Image 1 (cartoon, rainbow over the protein chains, first blue to last red):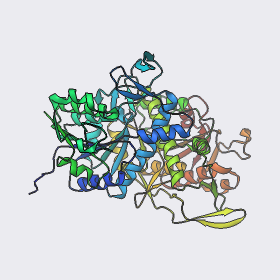
Image 2: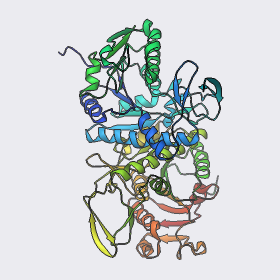
Image 3: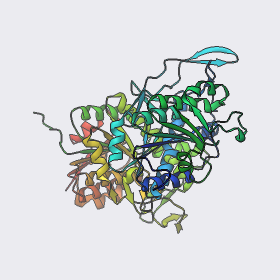
Image 4: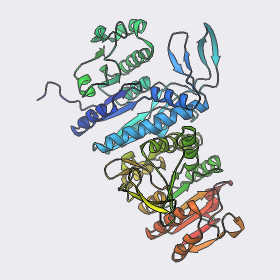
Amino acid sequence: MSDHPLPTKPLVVKVGGSAGINYDLVCDDAAALVRQGVPLVLVHGGSHETNVLSERLGKPPRMLTSPQGFTSRYTDAETLDIFAMVYAGKLNTRIVERLQRRGVNAVGLSGLDGRLLEGPRKSSVRAVIDGRQVLVRDDYTGKVERVNTHLLRLLMDNGYTPVISPPACSTEGEAINVDGDRAAAMIAAAIGAEQLIILSNVPGLLRAFPDESTLISHIRYAELESALSFAEGRMKKKVLGASEAIAGGVRQVIFADARIPQPITNAMQGRGTVIAL
Amino acid sequence: MSDHPLPTKPLVVKVGGSAGINYDLVCDDAAALVRQGVPLVLVHGGSHETNVLSERLGKPPRMLTSPQGFTSRYTDAETLDIFAMVYAGKLNTRIVERLQRRGVNAVGLSGLDGRLLEGPRKSSVRAVIDGRQVLVRDDYTGKVERVNTHLLRLLMDNGYTPVISPPACSTEGEAINVDGDRAAAMIAAAIGAEQLIILSNVPGLLRAFPDESTLISHIRYAELESALSFAEGRMKKKVLGASEAIAGGVRQVIFADARIPQPITNAMQGRGTVIAL
């Protein structure tokens, strides 16, 4: 018997898209867990590579900041093409390849596939530019409200490991940019995952970013709202995702480091920031 | 009763990736057929867009010509990334989106997903450069020899319409570039399709390319070898694919025009070049 019995419930792992993330280490660990019988769903990001490709194509990324301080990518139709090329094209294909090379029968899916991740497109996005609030209307952005668990169960019950990325599918069937952390939270809640692990290029939630010695090891659900005040940039969305996952019945959300060996196993054992009721 | 009863056997449609192809017309027709209960598999290319993106990224496409006169894309690791971005990223996502907007529950797959399209990677490729034969060794290229019909049937039996593109999966699990027409032929044979329709930006096989008045309306399997002599460039691979599909039990292969309304329905009714035993 191990001190850390493996879950029989599905495990959802979100791996970020920031610079410095080691996908080989993540896939080594994911493959070992799948071999041990863990029903795993991998969700991935791609923000850094999207920025790089946008620059190379002469379409520099533009970020929108909401009045509440949340940032999101301004995603017009051309940006959505670039986004899909990086997320659903290069990164998803290369992660599926890494898993196939490690003996895992992975299947890559975007949120459009089988309407896996569905929700309304925002008719307009409120943003602060130069201190003034403006409405942006040609943005293909939305929020996941429904997960096609039928498709996920169909694949998992037949030995396939889903590897999922945005874009998602609007109610009208359009490709829309959605936040990957919050999409992972919706997936974890929808399939009844016990744990949601959110890996990035920091060891967890830091009280004073970027000082890694200020890592918060445990935080309760009730304290998450106050965590929004010191969570930096992209971490704000992860906090929001954690909150939504736990409200949706996920027992633990763990923010952990994707730059180290066995990043998933370490996180499952509580290394990082553990969030629970 | 219609003069052209719809097939109960699955129908495989390959739509090319050359300039001028109208994906909206193809998806209108595909959606109408799916609504009528036709079990449809859509396979797509992306050569033109891959060339465009390669140029924009400062990595101009290089084509290899075999001693037999077949051309293929020189696909080193960086080219494969570009290839995956266009095929599995932008084009697959946008075709799935078109079908979702038309009420078809499409699922996009590359050949890596569930090892859908599997075959050996060539250890080296023989090519003619400046009249001399050379061996190219860093090419990620291969040929589909096995189709994961389990995954296709699983999806189709549950109401999903597969939208498939290269890359494929090497025996070792690597992403490899494979010819889309021949991949479609392997899929059609593997799932027992009655018809394989290969749509491109010409009305069919032309005896004197590009003179469209020289369209060949029927050609027998036994005559295909001689057709290789006048088939231009990309059409050579389509002829090879047609030959492989019919050898694999597909009753009819039809080369037809993707630039017109109802391109699939027209092809099913014999408009184009019909190839049969």
